[in-house]
Image (cartoon, rainbow, N blue to C red; front, top):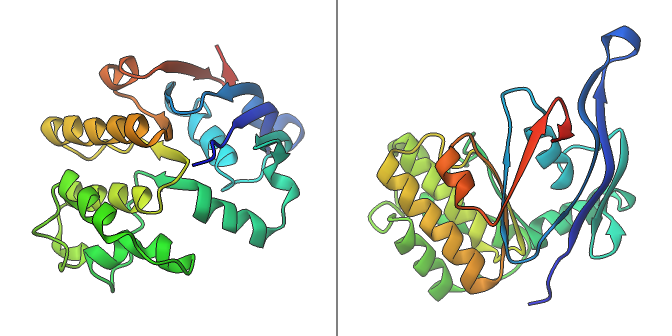
Length: 222
């Protein structure tokens, strides 16, 4: 699989005007290493989630560029950007964003179906086994615990074999053992499939297991 290179240049995301302006992201520049696990840490309100959302094509920045494979993703129209998110990116966020009217299995393969592709059954089953959902695949999201729903969200993020996985506190609702299992899965995915993992976490032990740690404070890298 072709590597996807991600770089941010002088990225800014401001809210409000004049004396009420809030500089959520304030001139951030960084390069994300391919095939590595990068952790972003910072206190609540530091701008780390806003940075992640801008890098993932989910929230348009006020200024600056997000370069993927040599091109600014915000030069694409909405349809083209949506296609990039479906094909290149995987998303794991605190809110699970599962579809309540379809079962666990269909939630997991949803990104593949939306792209008009056919699921790789062997690969999907290996993910389901890795996150411990073999007994849950026919259940609906409201029949699962919060931890189980997060595991579905993680499996869904991996289902389309994304080049880059964006994760915002993906273990925040999990117990310590499940957290260890999930992190082992994510890190193995990075290693085995040469994926890039960019994760926001408050868990210092998770951050310390990353290949690189980026600390954000008041919208800037420190």
